[in-house]
Length: 130
Image (cartoon, rainbow, N blue to C red; front, side):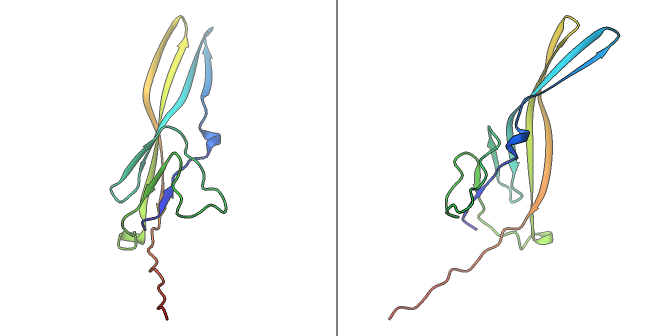
């Protein structure tokens, strides 16, 4: 607890996606672009980030905060049912489409994923002097 938690999604999935469908001589192309990710941390906290976040680098200082998407838990999850917090990442997509002489948009479509996370506390070690 009280240590920064880095939040990130696989950057390979944070890309614009396009698809075209054709039927009866008419084709329509849709383009989806990720805009933000809303993290619900399971303890009542939320964080919204405008990108996928940065993975925690191997060997980095565990006390370092994420440069772009992070959270600090204030309570342990051990007192929760199952001993975990349910973390939910909801990605918001803006989708545009064009075809058959028309165009439009579907702003704010979302995809969601959840994962259980265990947040523990470790008592500080103290040593007596002298």
